[in-house]
Image (cartoon, rainbow, N blue to C red; front, side):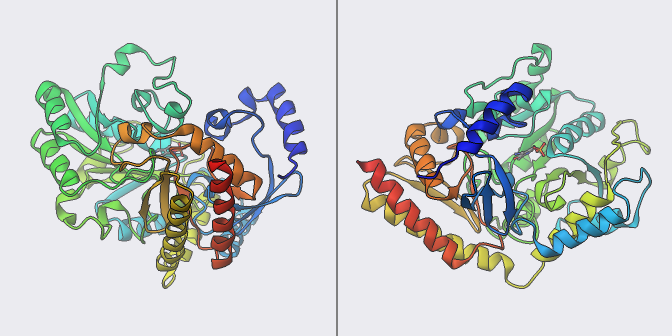
Length: 437
Ligand code: PMP
């Protein structure tokens, strides 16, 4: 087992100055038995080096954005060039048009976009725009989907909050919580009921069209079609939160993913984006139908602004990242390695009599410790958190970095190699063996 003394020292120090020692609760080890998280010092390609000099193969990918691997030369070059030209102008730039066009080409439901600084901001603003357009107040969301930390969507949210066992955050007025209705994912009856009851007040139905926040979960056939149809019949807007899913599975988003065939019937009115489209620098974006987006200032009455929005550094990194992803066979290779990894993990778990349910979608997957399928949040919660915590720690000791939560996905990058997969499978075999004893 590796010594992580320096991480322990730094954690004690961080606790003196930074709340909980971390700048996002998902980085804390609270959900995997507590103690010091690993303080990383450097990252390159698929690897991390911590403050004690230990090397790790990374499957966190910073919760998604780092799909090219760390410090990818093409992205680094773009960021360096942007830094030399000045990182923040407060004026429009041509770069913003370039990235906006790239997004529109890949995601046809975007007539108009607006850049912001995070997924949270993007989601928050789609809700404002939907409310402005429909002149209604309520939103419907799905249990276990995570849409950032704004008041409205942190009501019975999943991911971070549920991992920490605080399904509702303190500090959200009940008057606001009452504007949100939460229904189960992959269950059209739940949505039907909610629309029957509150329909005339519902501005929008918000969903992760492919879920990334209680594992990777595909919508069942017909779910998104039914969702779009019911929502539109009700005069409400469909908002897709594609902060994780855009450019994750192919050069496009869930709304154009081949795994979901009836594309015409599953187009949203508004989409929230983030993560990959900034190549690792802070970014978010939202967009959608022209007449809806024209609600936004300076054209319309819905206000949204940002000092850092569309800054040349984030935009340049985003363009460079998408250029890498446009490369021939990039997604196919990530998928090939991920198939090898998931098949190996499953076989290894089976050999050691450890129940494991893997949901793989191209180059990302979730591995839940359970012997049932995971198609909704209830099923994801009903998995063995202690087994995950043990596995997580065994893997970390063997140089494999995963997210410290049983709900988070594993992300491969364009930098992972066959040798990384072999090393990961060897570590997993040892970890499962150790868990069995
Ligand atoms: N939506 C989804 C689907 C997400 O996964 C996340 C972040 N994990 C967000 C929104 C919030 O994005 P950010 O952390 O950039 O605010």
